[in-house]
Length: 354
Image (cartoon, rainbow, N blue to C red; front, side, top):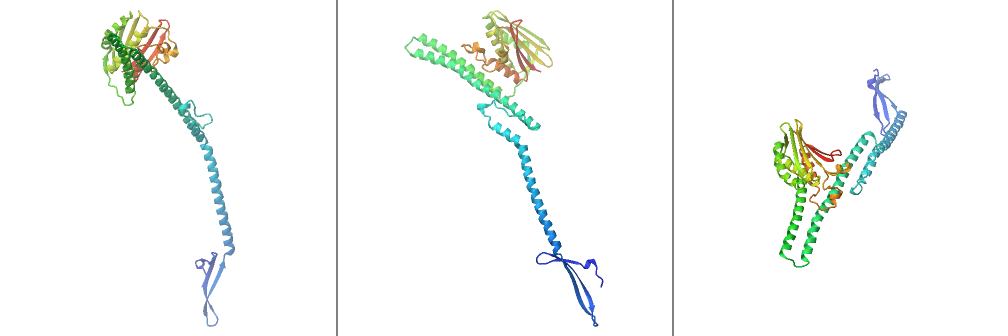
């Protein structure tokens, strides 16, 4: 019978070498005996070639993986080097050396933006930390003065037996110092309260003419003790402002007290109110000694009273204008201060948005 490709068969020896064979029946001899003829080909040479190629492929793959891993490691190390440097620099920053900054000069563009953003954050943290340190120092200074006075007066009184009227005078003097301590504590608690992120202020439309009338009647009496008086000018759209009435009164009271205390005796304290659809602007103008720009920049800082006031025992504790700014900020407005050299007057302006 004829052989076909389909008759070709594959197999493997026990040692794994492939073998191909074909089998066919044939008639031989006079008796036509049938015998099976098998022809086989052992693929020893081909198996050797394939084994060699297989080893080469395995070696090539292994070498490729090794080189790829090494190259990936080098690329990642080089790419992560700026992050490693940034991490090292960040780890060196502590409360004792907040002036350190991340080096952004050799950073890739994306990491440079991150480094600059971190430096801006560190600037704000350093400023806040310095303010907190200054606040603690000023608070200790403010509390130390009345406490020292109380201790000194009490020690003097206990040094010897005194008359009843002397003890009464001592108690009256001590009461003044206690009142001063109470004002400091109350102001600090007020600032801490309104600084809380969850604090919500309730605002309502207020007539500035009515609000000014309530306050001027009271503070005009205090101003007369220094031969001063108020001049109020309320204008604009009905002279209205949207604010919390108690906070507005407190802010204006602090400004009036500041003007009376630090203004020149015998002068006029001018108060201007201009209301519009955008909001209301309140300006307090009073003549006083010349104030340099560096002092103006610190005027709303807590416990700031200027060098001369800081070294003297006055009624001021340096929190009045800080409270004013906190109240205005809480209403979404802003405050500003300037000194008019021509008029020799300081101008404090508050703006409350509509």
